View 1 (cartoon, rainbow, N blue to C red):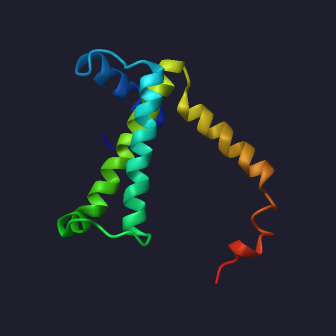
View 2 (cartoon, rainbow, N blue to C red):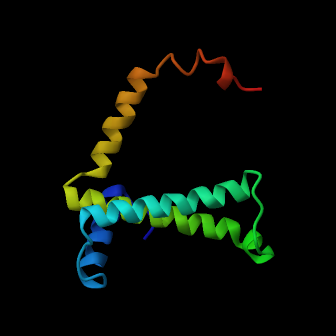
View 3 (tube, rainbow, N blue to C red):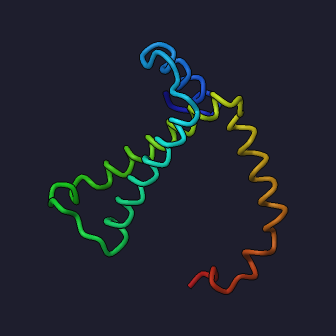
Length: 117
């Protein structure tokens, strides 16, 4: 499964949903699940990179794996929503990067807050 593109990921998720998952949840349910998953990423980020502490020591040890798992959950649900709504994430991402490249060509270079130290 190396060399995954967004198109391949969308196809793999669709295949999984239609075989193991049986069917997609509704778009509204998946939006709620996406929000929940992003919250789990935020919780871990606050503990790994912020000031919040872990409740259990073993969670701190497993935090990098937990963060990777939660980020994958976010991507999975986002891909489900893209599949359900007919969005090609790969072409959308390319268009988005092109838009940002044009719009932000000078913006970030001229931001003193982003200067390298």
